[in-house]
Structures are given as C-alpha cells and as structure tokens.
Figure 1 (spheres, rainbow, N blue to C red):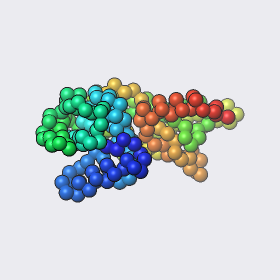
Figure 2: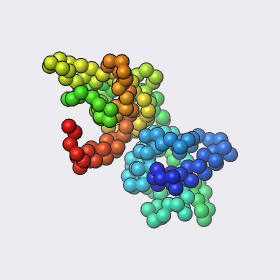
Figure 3: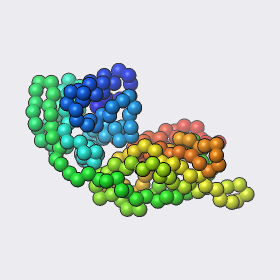
Figure 4: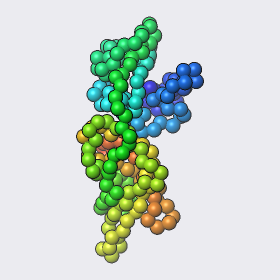
Amino acid sequence: MAAGDDVSELEVEVRVMLRALEHGHPIGNGYSGYFPEPYRQIRQAIHEHHWEKSNHYLRALGIRFLLVHHQRSGPPLAHDPGQALGTERVVSTDDETLYRLPERRISDGAIRYSTTAPLSTEPRVGDIVRIPLEKPPDQAALLYPRDGESVQIRYPGPNGGASSLNLRLRGSVLLDKNDQWIHLQIVDIGLSAGEGEGALISTERVESEMSRRRSGPKRP
C-alpha cells in the first residue's frame, strides 16, 4: 500500500491494479484513485505497527495473501512480518515475499446500531455524530449500510422545540472487536427540510479530527 496520498506515492497502487489484470483476483488496494475508509484504516494500522488491529482488519476483509515489496518496506518491516501478523511465508525472492493469512469466517455486515442519535447544536456540514452500536462485534467486521439506510439526528430547535435531520448513510468502515460506536460525518444537508447525507468515518479519523479542532479556532 502507498505510504500516503501524495501523487508520488500512487505508483504503488497503479502497479497493483495492473497486476490484477493478470492474476484476476480481488485486491485490497481497490480499483481506482479513490481511497475508501477501510483502505485508510488498514494502511494506518500497518504503518503504525498495530499488528493485532492490522490482522483483525485484513481478515475482516477476507484478505488471504500479503505481498511485501522489500525495496519499499524500509526499516520498519526489516523483520519478518509473518510473526507479527500470524502469516505463513509462501515464497520469497530478493525483491518480494508472499505471505498467506489464515482463513476465517467473514462477517455478513449485519451490525446493529441505533437509528437515532442526539446532537447538542443545529447540525452543520462537517459535524461528526457518534452512533451507539446495539452490541459490540465479537470480531472485526466491515460495516456497509444497504441502500436507503438512514439515521435520525435530533437536536434543539427554535423556541425550545425539537428538530431532526434524517441522514442517509454512505460509505463503509471497519470495526474492531468490542467497538461500541460508529461515527458519521455530515457531508450534505439538502434543500428539502430534514434531509441530508452522512459518511461513515473511522474512529482513527475522528480522533485526528478532534485533535485538529482542539488546536484550531473555536466554532462561533
């Protein structure tokens, strides 16, 4: 996976996609220049050496093989990642090593979460909303809402009344076992009253965003 989102890093992804034309197997890198949330989560976990979380996320997506490019790995992966990730070394050359992950059952995506959530102020584009899970997953899983799924955000309205915003969910996100929340970032509030869209974002991104906001100017 590319080390970052800079254009200079994307050659790695292009080569991976070209290889997929030859071998014909699904790849965790994706098939375009768009980086979905699960990709970013796996990349961050691996690059920060969170090996247990990396293992959980890779297996939640059903990834069976890892190809490590030695010339791009650098010192952080100078050791054998097989021990860290619980993988089996399949074949190795001077340039690359192929590893196999153990098989595991794949989540069917049936993760139950609350369909309502409170917000203390009138919602704006960019706001992050925390939604409680009805039950924490017993293993890492991919959450991908079906078309039309939504969450109702309730907030104080004018004159002390109550108002609501119905957010259609989009995107996908990886949840680790025992996670208790999912997070939505409001990306659109439509012209029609009470309708909008919310994108699933990872806990890792929420923590980064909260840190950025704490160090930035206060919201008026």
